[in-house]
Amino acid sequence: MPRTRTPRRWRSTLAVALTVALVSTACSGAGGGSSGDDDTTLTVLMVGNPQMEDLAKVTAENFTKDTGITVRFTILPENELRDKVTQDVATQGGQYDVATIGAYEAPIWAQNGWLHELSSYADADAGYDKGDLLEPMVASLSGTDGKLYAAPFYGESSFLMYNKDLFAAKGLTMPERPTWQQVAGFAAQLDDKPAGVAGICLRGLPGWGELFAPLTTVVNTFGGTWFEKDWTPKVNAPEFTEATKFYVDLLRAHGQPGAPQAGFTECLNTFGQGKAAMWYDATVAAGTLEDPASSAVAGKVGYAYAPVNRTESSSWLWTWALAMPKTTKNAEAAWKFISWATGKEYEKLIGGSLGWPRVPAGKRQSTYQIPEYRQSAQSFADITLKSIQEADPVNPGAQPRPALGVQFVGIPEFADLGTKVSQEVSAAIAGQTTVDKALADGQRLAEGVAARHR
Image (cartoon, rainbow, N blue to C red):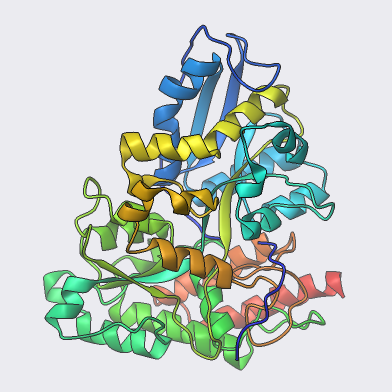
C-alpha cells in the first residue's frame, strides 16, 4: 500500500584520499557580511569526494578573488574525515572554521551545542534563498529547535546503477523497481571473471557510513532493524541475519575483487571503468559516471530504484553539508564561504566551467529547473529526486523504530556500534569469520547501547 508521508529528518558516504592546501589572496572585499578583509583565512575540512574536490579547485579563482578571503582545505577519505571532525568538534579543538558533516551528525551535535545555528545567517542573506532548499535536506540538518545547523552541499538517496551494454549483450531487461532476488540473478548471469567484469559492486569497507550504508537498507527491506521501538536489539534476529548473509554471499559469489577494502570511491572507479555490471550506491555517483572526462561508461548507464524485498522502497537519505563549529573566530567569513558553496550561483559556476553532470545536486528545487542541468542529467535527475522524496527516516522498514534514520540509527552510540559490527561483517566477506558470529558479537554490543536508552 502507499507509504504514509512523514516529516523527514535526515546518506552515504563517499571517499578519496587527498589533502589539499589552497592559499590564495586577492584585494577585493565583496560579500554579504562584515568580514572579508585581505588577511582573513578560513580552514575548511571536507570529505574527499569528486564534488568536494571540485569545490577546492574553483575556490581561489572565484570565492577568494571576489571576497579576499583565503581558504585552506584539508580533504580526507570518509572514515578519516569522520574521526578527525568528531575529535576536533567534540573536544572544542577549534582547528576548523568550516567542516563537512552529514545528516547523522547535525542534529546530535546541535543538541550538544557544538555548532553555530545557520538559520539567522541564511535568513539575513537575501541572495541565499533558504526556501529553495529541499525540505528533506533542511529537516535532516535541523535541531530540535527547528533551526538549521548545517547547509547542504549536495543531497542524495540511493539507487541501482547498471551497464546497459552488458545487459543488452545478454538480452536482459532491468525492471524500474527490481527486487534483490532479481539483482542476484542478474549478477550471476553477468559475472564474467575471465573478462574482469564483476556481476555487481557493493561496499565491503568497514565503517558505519561505508559498509552499513547500503547494507542497512538491505536489512530494512528484508524486515530487519537494529532496534525495535522499545530498544530491543535485533542485530542477530532472523531478518537481520538473512539480509546480511544475502549481502555477503552475493559479494563473495559475484562481487568485485578486493570487496572487503572497497568503499564508495573504489566502487565508483570499478563501475566507471566498466568492470562491474551493476552497482547499488549513492545517487550522487551518477554525475561522475555521466562525465566522459572521468568515466568510461558515460551514456551507457541505466538507473533503477533501490532494490526491495518486503518493503515498497528502500532508498536511503543523506546530505553532505557544511557546518560552522562554535569555536570558529571567523563566523562571518565562514558563512560567506558556506553561502557561496551551497548557493544557486555556485551550481551555475560548476555547470558552466566543469560540466553540468558535476553539479552538486539534490539540495535545491531550482537545480532541477536549469535547462542545461536537466539536459545533462536527464537519465538520472528524476529518479534521484523521487528517491529522495520516497526515503522515510521515520519508518524505513517493516516495524516502528526508536530513533530517526534510514541507513543509520540517529543516536550518538551508533557510530561506534555500526563501525564495530561492520568490521566483523567485512571480515565475513573476506572469509575470515561467519555472519552468525559477526552478528552475535554485534548483538552483545547493541544490548549495551539499548540498556542506556531504555
